[in-house]
Image (cartoon, rainbow, N blue to C red):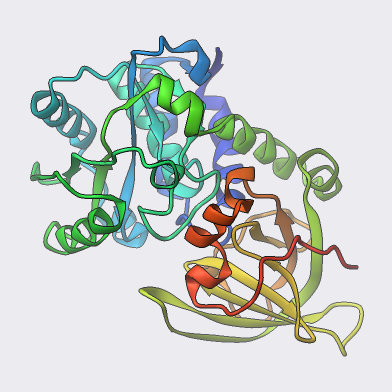
Length: 351
């Protein structure tokens, strides 16, 4: 067990933003909520899955919908308690802890806020190890764990319970519900047995986000490479951004011209998250590995929504969890799952 305090939030927010791989949403508003929750509740216990009794239950949670709407229409503060009360009443299972369904972007910080407000431990694990655009793209789906009943709670006190659904159908029904609920909702997935989480979840992901953030705040790009298995793919200036439908989500592509060699161009495809980086027709990195963008010389994470002409960026790649590099994992979150007819390629470093 270790503790997370309010002073850790800026580093956690920075690391979670990078692990979002261009998606996961801006962490600004969520960081304010997490910092406030920790200042009120005090340091939060963060526990390894193995520290929970095998019969204990922990529920994955996070935001579903538009982070932009979430920032414009912030939570009331009661969503987590409403969702947990409804889940415990519906299932008869008392929650012993919570965890993020993705320890990246806004959801890493919302899980901290939730655990602090509920006064329960936060499990240092998640279902993605990064951000993906769909709720069914988790290791819970990969290992056949039940994700329903799901509870959706909005800022007005409304609740929706989805039961008898798998991750695929739950994803679609949840997206339909949040349109009516105002653009975003807090989602609580089915309580998971600690024994199942120990077997299936991606562990130490909250700590990974925190440690990455500490390096980012020191503006130490080489440490990201040496200590976290990252690779610098490209250093360039954005010369073109095209946005339009990509799959079920907004997306597009961006072209970067190398800062040192004007003849080199990198094409970046994104669907919320960055999916594919190609140079001269060669795949330099692709999903499920994490393709992150940092402001050149500043180590400030940049989301795909923030891409604009003239921005100078370091394009980096971080390894995904080993579960995603299996044939089954690649079938769920590999490049072909997002419509790209390319084989998965280990990221290749470049000057």
